[in-house]
Amino acid sequence: MKRSYFSILLAVLMLAGSVNVFAQKKNVSKAKAKILSEVPDTKAAREAILPALEDPTTKNLANTWFIAGEVFHATYEEQQKLEWTQKKGDKALMGESVKQALTYYIKADSLDRAPDAKGKVKPKLTKKITDKVVSFQNAFTQAGSHFYSNKEFDKAFVMFDTYLSYPEISFLKGMGLEKDTLRTLITYYCGLCATQANKPEVAIKYYELVKDSIDSEWIYARLSEDYAEMKDTVNMLRMYQLGSQKFPKEPFYTRNLINYYINKNLMDEAMTWIEKAISQDEKSGALWNVKGRILENDKKMDEAIASYEKAIELDPEMADPLGNIGRIIYNSAVEELERVNAIKDDRLYLKEKAKLKDIFSKALPYFEKAYELNPKERDYVIALRGIYYNLGQDAKYKEMEERMKNF
Image (cartoon, rainbow, N blue to C red; front, side):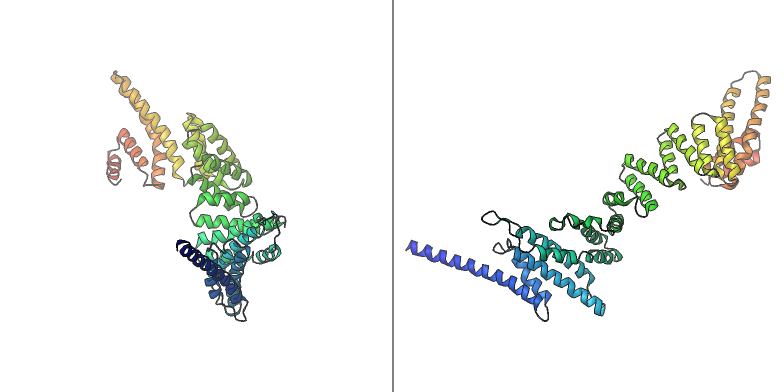
């Protein structure tokens, strides 16, 4: 009895398995028939083929995946025809379908090249797959452009990047696709997509590949900013330095280098780059002002004042160099004030005090002009208040005292 029961059960299970195998193979045939019929039904074809891609009885067959590729390629062509004839093609579906088709063709090829029971490799689908895959490469640029214009930057990136992946597909190697003249432009678009998707680490990879081939001035600046955002100081400085060499008339790179070195208190390096920047633009008052700050930081006050005066000569309406000269003179007066206040001899004190007023008076016109140009600068108000106090100009002192209340 037991043996009979298990024999019947085994027979049932085998029958069920064979039915399932038949059902899935029928699905593959049905999908193929749907796209080859006089009026193709790609929706029904997709519904038929998808279960076969997962079922153990058919998922390891090259033909299953090849037909899946054919179904999704047919879907792409169907929508493409609608777009060409009626401007009603679903561009998103076109892009998604061609991406799926490529995935399935690649899988079909890998299974088709698998060794048989005797260890021999006898691919049957290579030419068909190759021809199909090559035929729709440009579809990825169209899909990428569609998603990009709709601000779906991640999807656009996938499409453009898939276009670039073609030379690495096993059955396309050796076809010279890496020499495609569109690759530079598509690589650039990949970078743009990553930038728009706020993925600087991805954008960098693509911009580095084309930085000397397309839109170089913008890409160099973009790379500088991306590396800065990622706190990659080494590469940020590399881009500033390369940019300053490649675009000698563009101040962006040298000025950023100068700012970096000043902020790090690396004044020798800062001076090297400020001299380079001035050689590129001798008439920039702003650059001469920065040079003055570097010299001042290095305690070279006379040279600093000379640089500030050059800045004022070139740009009389710039407040900074006026305030900087005023500050140097004012600070020397404050230092002298401490010495004078320590004098015990009254006659000597009054004599030195009078000399001190001359120094404050010398700083005054610089701060007054700087304040006139930029009345919102708190440091100018503080300096003027101190100068007026030491010169005994009470009314103006009180004016600055009131002004301080607004900060």
